[in-house]
Image 1 (tube, rainbow, N blue to C red):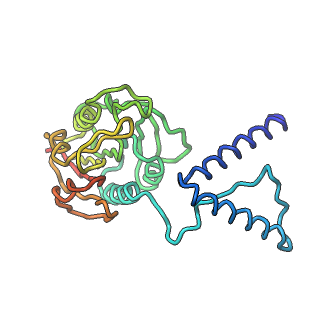
Image 2 (cartoon, rainbow, N blue to C red):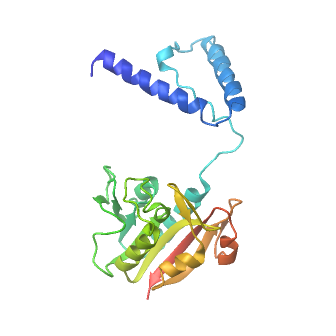
Image 3 (tube, helix red, strand yellow):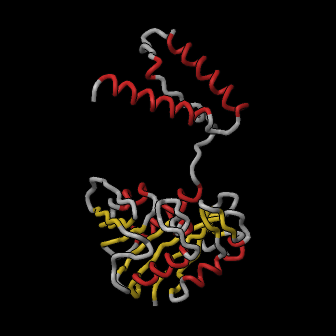
Length: 258
């Protein structure tokens, strides 16, 4: 790449970053003071003995990180720990994941041989890892053949076109039936999605009741139901009614096939 093209690429990245930072909170009364604070810090730093030269093309403002406690995505944080522990404690050497968070999938490779199925393959150089392009609506496995299977915060998106999949009002139900089809007798399925007052938010996700999910997996046996409530509490053995009363909770279902 030529020097001019490299410079243009860096300017584009810089512009996009500035835009994201200034629109990050969607509140100008928060962003503007943070911007002035950034400029003050930059000026103060430049006057410190031994400081590096500050070039405009290299400035990279991070305006939203001065917080009192560490922030995290509550659903993904707890669900990944929940599923990782169960998969780690399981007896199965191989595990198949369908479309879950790639950081979670990567960590699993430390403890198991992992096959990752998604319409967008994960190109990563890892031991114990294979990625296959595939759809949750048509998994490349025979009936009753998979002993250890996970699908975390995925099924609620199916059929909405958000990730390039086909539009289908029955997407979540069909995804659940396909996971059930390939799960082997005595195998384990770790499954999660938003639970609460049922509603449809096109094209982001669907929110289901626990009763609806149980009906989708009618041929499986629930081993344990855990969940995350609206206050961000991770609750093991949560009561289904408590989970259903959430506005946007997360149900963590551990199923097996009889």
